[in-house]
Image 1 (cartoon, rainbow, N blue to C red):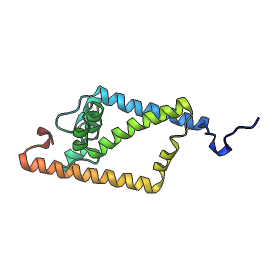
Image 2 (cartoon, rainbow, N blue to C red):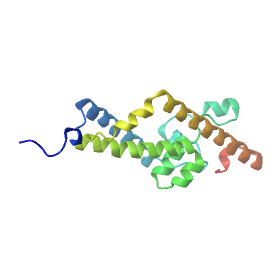
Image 3 (cartoon, rainbow, N blue to C red):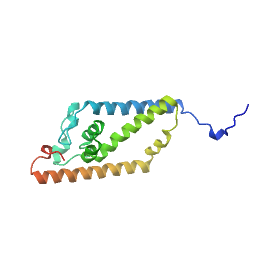
Image 4 (cartoon, rainbow, N blue to C red):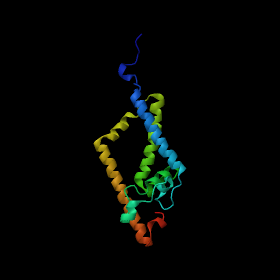
Length: 165
């Protein structure tokens, strides 16, 4: 007996490769979220990464300026701890990373469990134009962090780590 639905209407399931990729996305996003949940955001707005056993920022030691990733670990940690506005103020790109991890986790889990193809549009984020836009957002975020950093440093006349932005 023939189905009443046209062939184009029947939803296709994710392939095995898509499900394996979704598993990888779920694991990576969960690792990021769980690590951030375990950390305590540094009140200075940067330096949270040292709780992972990483050294203090060599870029700052050499230049006196924030590095391109300055404040990202703190911003992700703030977002995971339920402070999205503080996260965005601390480091906008870090807040976007936290949001992307949350979305990636749930979309990946949906693809993995149900075989949905809802994750397919996200593959467009790997195209050159999207990657350039992401890089530009990262650069703008770094510029914002540097301006904020220098404004706090100029206002206090001391090391920026003594004041939360």
